Length: 100
Image (tube, rainbow, N blue to C red; front, side, top):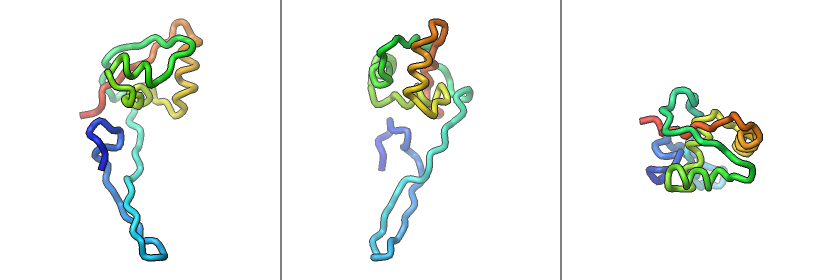
């Protein structure tokens, strides 16, 4: 259902039959892994104006891997995470590897 690089790859699916008889298939909920449980690939310094997709492209070679930065930093609000890291000269972001 999802590409092997997707954060949703490997999730179970479920189906729901609507009142009109149509069946809708969907991916079950993805729970965020604890960031500390993920291996760190590198630490990244964010600068004002940085974007998650551009950082992900620089680190992983793919802008769609931004979610690895989010997972590695327990980010429920990715834009706030990035803004906070960019404002703090001592802050770094963990670029995480996915769980295997």
